[in-house]
Length: 415
Image 1 (tube, rainbow, N blue to C red):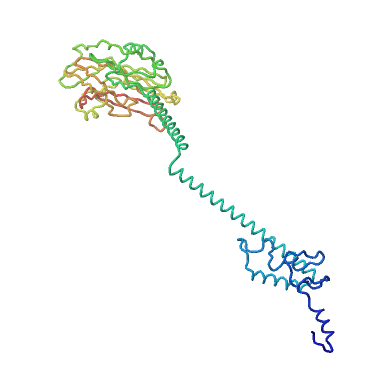
Image 2: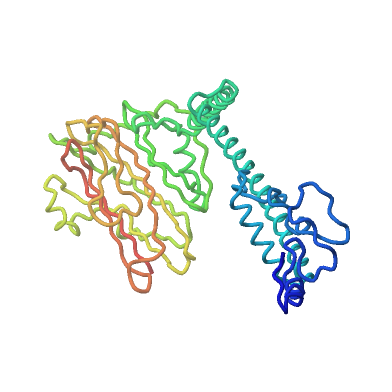
């Protein structure tokens, strides 16, 4: 029984006015539910109780708790419930309802986040498992290739080997087809005797570009040396033929000597020009021993000099062309020894006019003669500043390492 005093009635009214129910938020017009809520009991439709906001102390909002599926302990749940109830009981009804909805929405979002995190964890685990399986399969494939992968490799290697063999065979066939013909030594090269007759019958303007330097002996064939020009065509060369008859020099024309010796047969020299810009001065042809006495001092075994040609070149008529001419002469062996096969003409002075030397390539016995047909190329201009000038070239015969015979001269003057 409540103590009675003079203010007892007013105290009870004050207590009812200031103390709210623990089950009903402040401002609620409905009656307070039972102080001890019953789990599973239907809630009033018009009066929301604390179960409607936060549930019972033993209940759990969907998704509440840790994301790993473990429930919080009962003490924490009770503390959480008391904290929410105290907070809602101290707020106005409208705000309390709004806060309750926010709390429920946050709990649902938390549950959804936990579910999504669990789903992501499962996906990550699946990816890790599949990746590890793929890596293990690749390692197994690298460690020991399967027959399905080895067969294409073997086929590809065989195809590469086949292609390489085809390329090598093709290169060999091409190289065999592009090889030059075998070289012919001077002693084996022969020309039809009709070529010399045709060349001598041809006029200077018709002399072929591939003119031959011809030598004739008693026992060997004819040796030819070819020099190319640009303005005329070459004569065809026929199959090798027998050498022409040897011309024996009358004994009265030759004075025999013991060592190697040679003379030019009188009247055997001639020049054939291939361009109108070339001309010869016959006054200077013939013996030039007196003019070359100083040069002959270096060759004691050379006793004479002979000027084969003295050519004038009109520079203005050349028009920058390369021209040539031919000199013909006959050498006779007036000694008692045969010229060895190594005998040759050797350039000893000047630029040679394209004729730097000529190997005979055959023996010339005593009393035999040798017909020479030498081609000379004329430079486009002289050595002077105005394109004019004088040029002299000289050759000697050399056999067995010793010079002999006459010193052959060729003079060219640009005017």
